[in-house]
Length: 209
Image (spheres, rainbow, N blue to C red):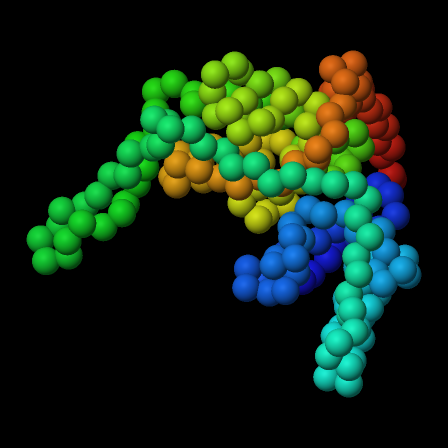
């Protein structure tokens, strides 16, 4: 398990996990916002790693003890972006002596995901669902306007353009993609406010002689 500092508020965020590790087995996901580790607020990601390491180092002395308790800022949900009949076609190569090899993915002519995203105000963690097209994969997996996506395919989400490109590439390549999203939703007015705030940040640049 590794952490990064939360960009806007107190606490740290899980940035990577070992798929075979105990944290994944207990339901932790990339994008989880951690407020306390064993009841203590970490002062940044470095201290959080020290807290975790010091706890695990005591494991051998008392195998019956609860070693790691994480206090989450909010509940999240894991969604699978997929829909029957919307799996991309894998193109293979018939090179003599090599056999069929996966090479490229044929991208469908029409969008199958139906998802529009916007950044969090002032670069906060996650990207916000701004719009969902009815009948496509995003709606089918449970996403709706106001949900915040914290990770996609185990990768933290920060910039909406990069996230959407990644989601499209992975979805059309594999035919499915795991997303970690908030269980609560912002109102449409709150989503609109986020977008307006991002577009109206004044910047002044002074020339230095």
